[in-house]
Length: 99
Image 1 (tube, rainbow, N blue to C red):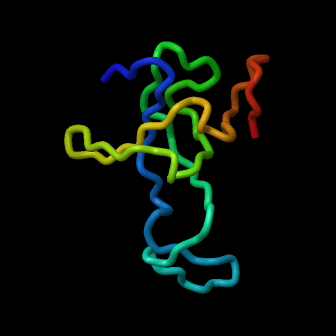
Image 2: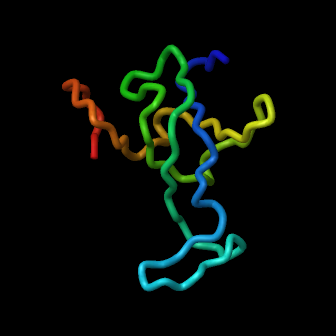
């Protein structure tokens, strides 16, 4: 698959289901958490994306994405500007923030 322009394709975060708090309380998938950011792995990037590569893990707001199904797998489409941070072992002197 080829993404266009500044679009980034990420896998649907697994944390969207049930999760546990640090104290061990089970939080159901139906619980609404206001303005919660999610981490996901990048599957593909468009030609105008400058600081993110396939395989990076990115932090984003799920409300700023579009859902899509590709060959039976669920993905989200984002714009590069909607990504807040990149967790990556590579530090190549780019302008992005790497956690």
